[in-house]
Amino acid sequence: MKVGFIGAGRMGQAMARRLIEAKHDLGVFNRTPDKIKGLVDAGAKAMALIAEAARHGDAVFTMLADDAALDDVAGQKGGLLESLPQGGVHICSGTHGIGVIRRLKAAHTARGQILVAAPMLGRPEMVASGQAGMVVAGPAEALARCAPLFAAIARRSFEAGAEPEAATAIKIANNFVLGCAIEAMGEGFSLVRKYGVVPQVFNDVMTDGLFACAAYKAYGKIIVEETYDRVGQMATLGLKDANLALAAGEAVGVPLPSGNVWRDRLVGAVAHGDGGKDWAVMALEQARAAAGEKDVSLGGGASVAQQYLAAGLLDELVVSVVPILLGGGARLFENVGDVKLEQVESVEAPGVEQRISVDAIQSISILGTGAGSVLNQGITRFFREYPYSRIGLRCVLTNDQFSVNGTIHDGGKEYLVRRGFLRGVDVVNQNPENVISFRDMEERIKRISRRPQAPSAGSQLN
Image (cartoon, rainbow, N blue to C red):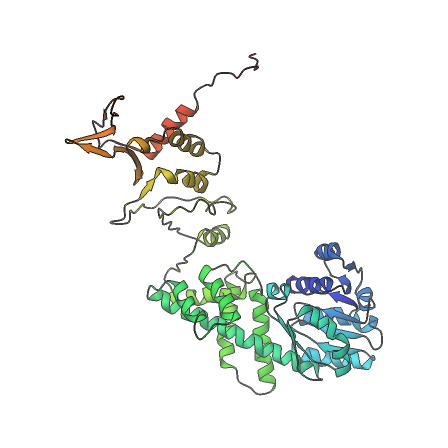
């Protein structure tokens, strides 16, 4: 089908790509033209005006952030109300107020146009993978005509009836339940953290038990990892949804007490500068509320620390160094700007010996300084070319101290090298307690690696 599309935000992009992949002839308009370049490269046609998108085909989608944007796109000179042909279908997929949808339906009907409400159920990544749902409502003939479009975007379309506001009410109620669930999860995580529970354990209990569903798994993961910068729904838009839900309830006399808590957490998040983060950030707002005047502690890996360092929100950073090397990983202070840190204290974990064998030197090199470092070129080469372990040497880093010991003990002596049956010499370790720091050892390796090398055959000296 030929179809227009207005609005290329995160959700709009995901929906439009699904239509392109299903081979529909898509004409796309966005107020910021740069945002549709990827869609045009994928096969869409760029529309310079709202009117062009409205007349491109049998229907036109709008996926807009709020009621004000919808009012503007529909009502401005050259907007949808002026430009959509008689019999044309406006498929409104954003989350909007019921009053706005009712007024828009009346305006379309007066011009012989048709309004279908078709809000999405799911985050943009779910839409992109074809796993999201869609609630559709409007005249039966229009729903049947647009069914191939709905099938291209959503895993399932839930038909809510002939009145567009029915789909809008379901979307608002769905977001209400989801938002309150995220807020309640934030309360639960705050509670168990107060008792020293590892957040991942609580998340596993929820998502592998009574709450084994996509929403709890997705948002539980975000809360555990505190990856609020990976935005599906911004906190500011979540606050809009909370206001829509409370307004819808007030209009028909339905109290929504949980909605007030949900809204308050989002208001707090926006007030603390987190409006651009994922709306799951209300869990962080709950942690702030639980802390009161006390400090708020955040736990996580390098990616979590980088987000808060870059945002300038950390007053104190505690780094736990654990001798478990995986051969790679994120560098803590990359891409965080000009961060000034002052060491407050260094605490050794009581009873924990930090032992790293020389087999892990390659991993230290990759984790700490990158491939090709002095460590990589020097130390690993040193032990690769001189495999002393084969002749009875044991080399270990323990609490930043490097030691070399013999593995052969005989007659009260420790041998670094024991002579063979017919040849060789005995080398006794005269001072088995002698150690040097890792930094001293590194400097010695540097000196070895700086030794000038003889010019190769055919090279010229100036």
